[in-house]
Amino acid sequence: MNMTSLRPLKVFFLVASILGFLLINLPFLYYFSFEKLIYNAAMGNPVALVFIAEAFLLMFLFAFLIAKLRWKRPGWVLFIVFSILGSMAFAVPFILYLHLRKEGVE
Image (tube, rainbow, N blue to C red):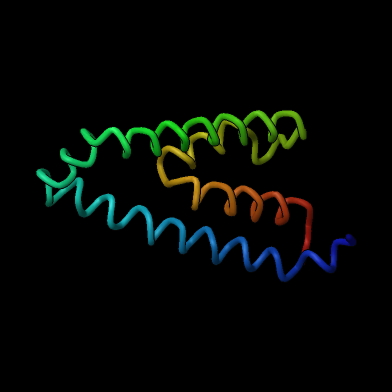
């Protein structure tokens, strides 16, 4: 795959990261801020905790892969920060977008 064929993916990754940030984080922040009973019930639900554990496991797996691929900028630390502040639906496509941008894909 040459660099020119990656241009549509660069835009796709940027749009996917924006949608991942908005569609996951905004509802979470709403319930965290304004619907404490629903938020607390969700955090006490064992099924929700399994999904949270899975997200953390995948976060560390992707961070390990980024380190093994030797992506220095963006690196694995920034990926973990994006995953915790955003979500995996935001962090994965955004890191791929940043990597393609760094490689100079136009």
